[in-house]
Image 1 (tube, one colour):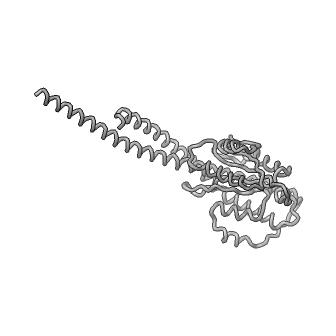
Image 2 (cartoon, one colour; image 1 turned 30 degrees about the vertical axis):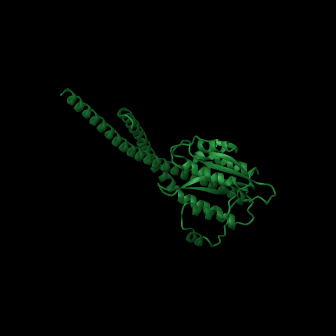
Image 3 (cartoon, one colour; image 1 turned 180 degrees about the vertical axis):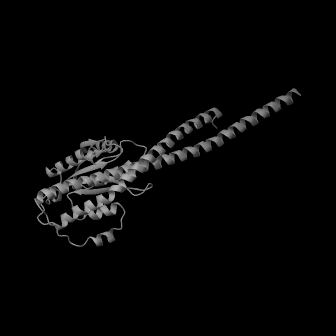
Length: 303
């Protein structure tokens, strides 16, 4: 059994760790509330805007915009641009591991050639270790992401696709379901397909059959002015909105996962302190009993 001094040192060390994890839990909880509020506030608009894009893709004839154009079937591999959204820091449970694992599942398809734009240092490090080409890395987003911060990454994505360097653009991110549940997800955002609406609704956990039943009615669109220019502007802005929403979802998921991880760490620290306190008391009682025995033995020998 370890000595009482060593046990006291371990208890003190764990108490200090518990103070840190508790403080991190409170900070993450505060950030989570703001992140969840922003995510839920824009989710409905993101859903409607994506519905509009998929409806245009399905109902508008002679649609020549690149963001709606599926690449022709080819014998060579599909070139896929993967947008990997992770965190800059760790200590957030399985959040990063789940998203990276989801991204790696895409690599198992031997008919695809994948290049990466990373958002967050953890994903960037993981992809470089796997030997993938990372064409750009974004790590400086603020805690409260604004739509203006998304312009550089969205412009890069659209420029790369319209330049015919890639056949698909897929995003690996985490959907926020609740404080206890975050769902890693792969979602194709370019080219826009009518099937994409089903994937989006499934990702946020809505009742998909009821919603899709309401959207079966064909829509006839009337355009005033330059049709191509209008669709181009609309497609770019609403696609940017989808990227923005996925970043919000990932930020809320990250803060929730970190809060739960720090809460679990604080509770585990408390249990370790209780166990070590019991061991300390047993060791101290054993020392007291031994000292009494030695004193009694010494008095008996003198008598």
